[in-house]
Amino acid sequence: MRKRRRDPKDTPQPRLGGTGDGVKRRPAPLVTKGSTRSKSTRASQAPEIKRRSATSRHPVVFLLNFVLFFLVISIAGAIAVLAFGRQAYVAQGPLNAPVQLNIPRGASVQSIAAGLEAQNIISNQYVFMAAAYTSGATRRMQAGEYVIPAGASIAEVIDKIVSGDVVQHQITIAEGLSSAQVVRRLNENPVLSGSIGDIPPEGSLLPETYAVTRGMERERVLQMMRDARERVVAEAWNQRDPDLPLSSPAELVTLASIVEKETGAAEERALVAGVFVNRLNRRMRLQSDPTILYGIYGGEAWERPRTIYRSDLERPNSYNTYQIPALPPGPITNPGSEALMATANPAETTALYFVADGTGGHAFAETYEEHQRNVARWREIERARDANSPSTTE
Image: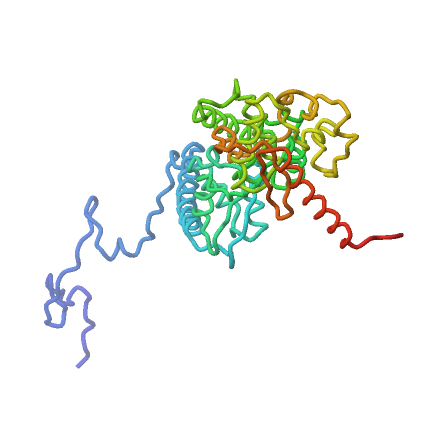
């Protein structure tokens, strides 16, 4: 039997929601105008790129961002520098042993810092300068010579220079020096600075040991000696024997200068002064050999000690106490405080004469005859000494 051709219209249509194979299927979603896209559709599309706003591209904003970045970096760097500086400021220094440091007058902080580093006292001159400026130490640093201990930190070095705890040097001016001799010794002292103009008057300086610092002006040391002399003379004059035949502190200094040159023995000063006071009370000439030499040579007399001859005694000069009736016109040297006190309070004695006894002291006598015997013994000692001294020939 011939098969009939199936008309497409006769093909059974699947039911809505069916599969045609008897299996139910979920109908495909319909996309209509205005409907929301599915998630799969949105995921398949490229992400949208956001453009930078015009404000962020503005030059002012760019500059502010750069400044902010720079400030952050600067603050971080400053903190690091401060931490380093603080550590270097208090850290132990490189010195292995104490040294003496000399800070000259007028030295700048830069030169001081450079010198400290050059001498290996500190390890970083810039930390020293920064600390000195920030602490205000630059205005309080004092010139002078300092002892810096081993291992001193920058903080300790600054404190030392600010404190003014300088090294003290001792200058001893011996009793009995003339003012010219005193000036010469001060000029030769390497610790002092400056120059001395005029030589001070004789007797205006007090021989003593003085504490000075390196670089101290020589004129300042002279002023210290003047001030000390005024103080001691005033004290001696106020404590003088009321029967002293002297009318002023100036006369006290003049007589004390003669006592100073007549004896170097401390225990004899008051006794020698007593002899001269006795002679003044009797209006006798003092007859002091040192006054003759000073009258001849002035302030250089004690640089050239020599034997006094009869011709010297007869040679007139204003200081020759073998000829003038009383005190010379002024001091012949700078007496020390002991000679001044001894002259202000002389020993009670009846002696009117004295002469060297060959032992470093003197033989005292009440009468001229006794004195002549003492002089004869002294002459014998001198002759024996000259005979035993070796002679030199060229």
